[in-house]
Length: 298
Image (cartoon, rainbow, N blue to C red; front, side, top):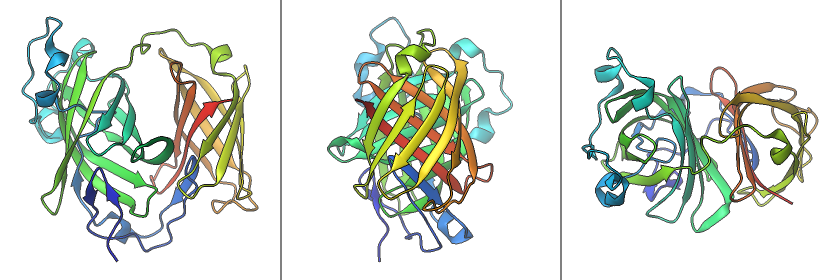
C-alpha cells in the first residue's frame, strides 16, 4: 500500500506501527521507529511562501531575498541572528494543491504549520513541526516532523526556506523520491496584537479527517475542556505566551475511550480573529504523541 499524499506528493512508506489519530481534536501516537523512514525536506515554515511566485511580497521597500534557496541548519546555527530579522511571526497561506496553511515561528526558532484537507479549510489534515535557525532571510531545520492525519502518520523531514521579515516566507518540501512542493504565505495581519483571553473564550467545533466532530470550550481564565464524538475527552489550560493571541497550552486526556489514556501533552495554541478559529497543537517530549485541534467559534 502506498503512503498518503501531502501537498501533492506521496510519502515513501505508510505508517504501520500503532499509529492513532484523533484529528480536529486529533491525537496521533507513534511507538515504532519505522514511522520515521521518510525524509522530506519541508519548505513550509509556518506557512512558507515561494517568493519567486509571490513577488508582491517585496513591494514594500524590502530588498529581494533569494527565494528557493536557504541555508541548511548546520550552515546557519553558528551565525548571529538579530531578532528583528528572524522569521518569527504568524503566517497564513495556501498550497498549490488547495490546502490552507496557518503557521507560527516562535522566538526560540520552534515552528508549527497546520494544514487542512484539499479544498476544505475546515478539516484539519495535519501539522508540520520542528526547530530551526533564521539568518539573513534564510531558514534551515533538520528536526522537522510531519504529523499527517490522512494515513501517512508521522514522518521525519528537513526544511529550508527564505523569508522577508513581516512580509512573506518561502519554503520547499523535497521528498526522498525527488518530488518537491512549495507553500506560500504572508504575515498574519494581527500578529502584533495584544493578548485578549476574553476574545478567545467561547465554544468551538471542528471536524476531524475521520468525520468525528470535536468540541472545545475555553473560558476567560484559560481553562479548556474538549469532547469528541468517539468518546475521548480532554482537559487543559491556555496561558499567555506572547503577542498576537498566542498561548502556551497543556492538554490531559481523560482515559476511557482515549487511546493515550491519561497522558499530558504541552504545546502552543493561537486564535485567528479574522475567522474566529482556534488552533491547538500539543505534543509529548519525544514527539511521538500529538493532540491537534482546529475549530470555529459557534
